[in-house]
Image (cartoon, rainbow, N blue to C red):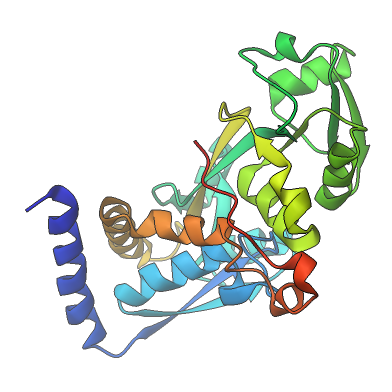
Length: 274
């Protein structure tokens, strides 16, 4: 039996055992971050779906409370919730929280038109390119420094939709964005013809890992993380973890309101990142 087959068999066996018990209520605080966490998206977003399924397989019934991000953090640190999701690692957060294994890999890439040949190895390769970006958005210390000193030029607008419109009209050459956020914006706002014109470069600009945080003050916190991390590892080994994000890129988490618009807004496969 292959490693993946063995992991899947273990997953099914443990699932059957856990499902025999009455689910234990578990509340987490979260913020709004489409397409990962959002009350507007199916399953409340792909990360919410992943968390709910992992915890259900461990015998928990997950209830997500959507709050402003600062309150989601503060209330969980104060013990009002069993945890909060999802957060990047910062050393100062370790005072209040225990970290899970990484739940999400946020990968920022450069979107560009397929007709435009684009390769890059360093930020110096972007000299002379007109970039689109978000208001007050950070793209990592190195690129932020290039932008601050004027070595790179960026036109900033409020939304991903506006940036993709500018890209399609050749008003910008490149648009750095988190890959799933970018493709979800394309699927939500553009027709098949427009989507077919856009691609991304496989070299990441930036990778961020995000985690489930559990309060150190919770006496059950270590056990929760132990069970969560074990199940998360099994999802990854069996390939189930990847399926959530494949479905995301196929538009399966889009709100019904987006899918019920006219045909030009219907999602089409855009492919997985390389």
